[in-house]
Length: 200
Image 1: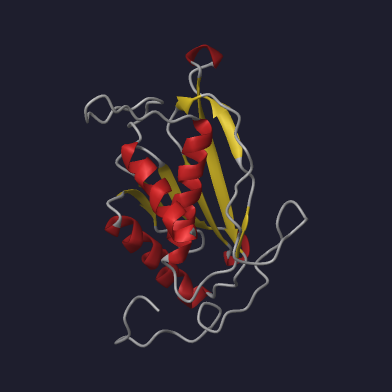
Image 2: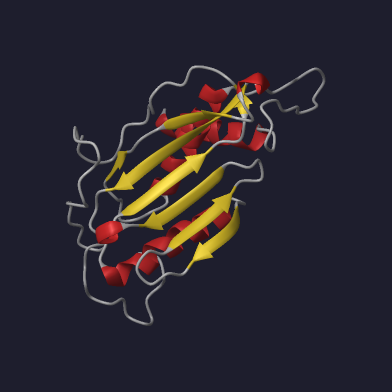
């Protein structure tokens, strides 16, 4: 059931209009329109799809979800941002590998890599869907990974908290603690053999 929901939400991203709250797919009288809640659900689907592409799986938790008005309240549109924080400890020698896994998966989905920050300590990759959902994966303090997805401007609506269940423990503290879950692959300090594939 979860896989079916994910597929439906990713389809919603494909049907969404580029930077506009209302989109049209001409098929008789069919008209596809999205509001902020539907956009947020699609952003959740992108996050889930990204995490599911990573093997071995990462432990992660929802981070602050926010909304903002687009162009002032008079437009009747708004944008939502969904964020996730990786709680798996990713060693220095495996950070580039994880960034590469995410970048290749986004390219495979047809997303455009808009920018790459090759900073040695705090690298990041930025991307966008054809419909202008904006994503990022970034390394922060203590090597913690952060993912975010921001929607284009859609019709204003109430936006509920993220619905997907995170893969990891539930944290009651805000902000979230540093990464605290060991993984045999991602936390390893052993360099990958030169002949190994770039994905685990």
